[in-house]
Length: 265
Image (cartoon, rainbow, N blue to C red; front, side, top):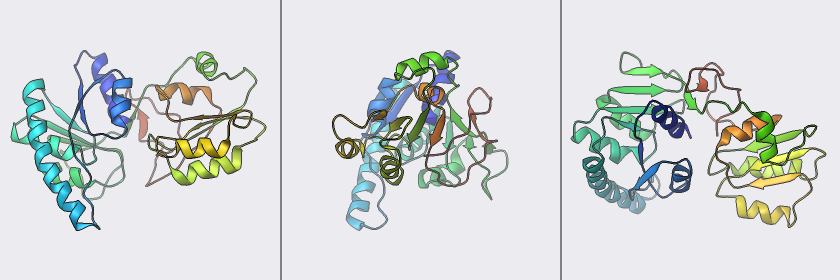
C-alpha cells in the first residue's frame, strides 16, 4: 500500500496521519498498520450501468459533505490523495476548504479522480513519466514502498522457514489477482520447495477449498500479511502479476533507496 509507506515516513518525522477510506481492503489494512481510519460511504463510477453510475454520483455528493466534516474535525495541514474513487470526494472537500492538496498516481496513467483534481492540486506525484503531464505541478517520484526489512532470519522464522528451505512467494495485491492465484495453485501445489501464497481477500476462501484441509505440504496460503516487508525478506523468489509499464529505476522505498524489483499488482 503506497499510502501506508508514505504515512510511515511522515509519522517517523513526527507528523500525525489520519486516513479517510471506504469499506474495501483499507478498512482492515489501515488499522492493522496502526493508523486511524475515518470511513466515508462512496463507490466507483460505473461506465456501463447508468443506474449504478447515478447512484455513485449521489453517494459522491454525500461523501464530499462527510469528508468536509472530517476535515473540519481533523484540521490537517495538507491532504494527500492516493488515487481511486475515495480520493475524489476528499480531494474536492480539501479544495473547497483551501487545504493544500497533493495527489499521488501509482499507475502509468492518471485515474479519473486524479484527472479531475490535478489542475487544482499543489503537486501531482507520478510513479512513471506520463506524456503531457509535466511542468512544475508534476513530479516523478516513483511508487512509494516501505523500507526493506533487513532481518532475514527473523522474517523466515515468522513463516516457519528453515535455513536451507527455498521459498517462492506468490502475491497480487490486497484484493488479489485471480489469474495469478489460480495458476499458482496449479503450478506450485505439491512442489518440492516451500510456497508462500498471499491470495488477497477476494479469492482466499475458494483457493483454500481447492487446496483442501490440510493443504499440500509446504504450501502456505495467506489472505494478507502485514508488514509485507517481512514477506519479501523471507522468500527467495517471487511470482507476481504485471500491469502497465514498470521501470526498476522508479519503484523504490520512500527513503530513496532502490527496491528489490518485483511487480505491480
